[in-house]
Image (cartoon, rainbow, N blue to C red; front, side):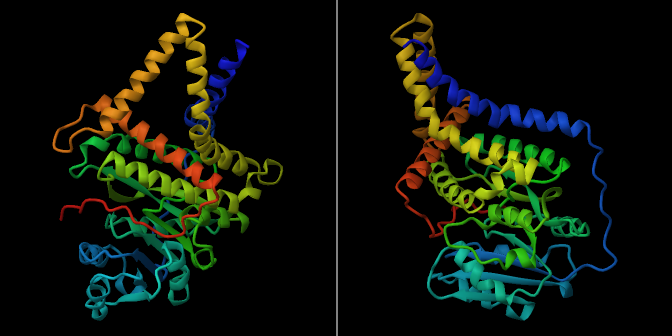
Length: 390
């Protein structure tokens, strides 16, 4: 019986170690054996593109978003800007309409159906060969769109993902998010060097029009699904380091828990949509990457409670187990303290990291509960982030 608590601890620890350390380490070693990818120059003529921004009740910031899009370094006669209003009930539509004389188009979805449903509705009006997707809360850097579009000169590429730069705007308690985003971008860079990524960044990514026009059910995340669709078409998805966008951290650790639950729940549904791509005999390295980068990470949240049971069990049998329990309890207590930390006070970094870890775990566990109950989340609830400074 003594081996059972060790097994309960070992399984989630092994999954976590592979997903967050072993797999990236393997990528890093393999990437050292590959030559650095060539940098693409400007095309002879910039292709016509469509830029889409889904919006739900974004009246407070849609004006600033549109102004920043109009200032992007891309020929104005070679781009279309479409704001997709997902049944907004505030003045979002009126504000967008005021920019009609500057070439900004409004796609109004009368009945709110969620982000993916709104994107389905907007697809027929897109005229670009390449579609750039972003969000009303994201600030795209002026040079980023050209950086994405240059990538499509390679005919094997179907999706190009931007690089998120996470910043704080009165959200010091959620500093752990910035560290995680930096880690995620590093892993995607390694995957790109070895062939391609398994999911794009929802903050900023571009796709060929045939991928964008693939109709998806409302509970599927298009940014993740686009990479899967590309692979089925024999194309690659890559991360573009120069295509940067600024993303304000979620306003609090509690908001991070809710965001994690929503995004991972949709991610699990999308993984089911692309489950056949995890067959290594047919899809080789892509299947290994998809299983390691997505499924293994999410399995950490599902199996972590087993480790808790194992630690408690071990604590009843040995002094070492008791010490391990005290260490684990201290970490959880630190995370709980972070969740309850007053917003007006600066949080110590160690506490912020513990809080982000606990918030992520609670959100991930909640997402698995949604999946177990077959509770789908097709309705889009955009994360309300702080406004970016001008």
